[in-house]
Image 1 (cartoon, rainbow, N blue to C red):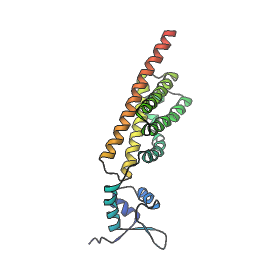
Image 2: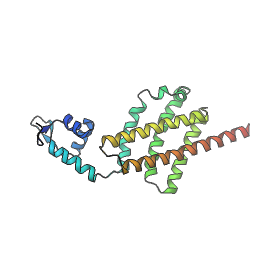
Image 3: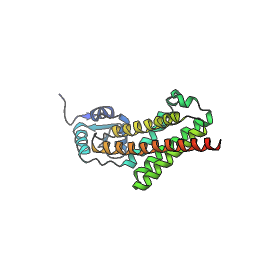
Image 4: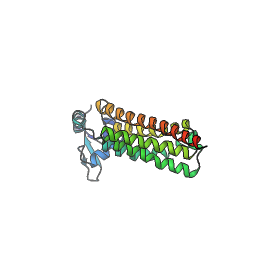
Length: 212
């Protein structure tokens, strides 16, 4: 028989909440989730407190996009270094210096989204254009076609979206308005970048051919 006031380990509390144990540990350390310590220093949770906290969190949780994005950006490097880049056809065409530039350039995409979320409409459009220009000019510099330039951008966009969704999921944020708003903003931002990338690439190509 399951008792509502039974004690749970960290892993059991995580299973009850449907999140990773590291997420429960983080919530506990931040004082968000009620936690008790044994004499040996182990975390223990009361089932009824965990369930009450989960219900309250669902009803009152306020999402701060900037905080969520910071957490997502910390997850990006891990995803990029797991061999995924090496499997990309466009990436295989680059030398070591060019590869390093693309990895570093990923930061501008992620930081750009941070700026986009905090910008006015006019500033947001400028932010997206700047990132698109950077991707286009880098592709031209390393002799990538406009198709490969697009593939490179779409790779990093996928990593960005996956990272944000992972953070939202681990934070136990119910799918709904918060998810819809963030996904909507990410798609608007990245769509504007893609248009800027293609327009810039075409302009750079025209200028080069014209000089020839």
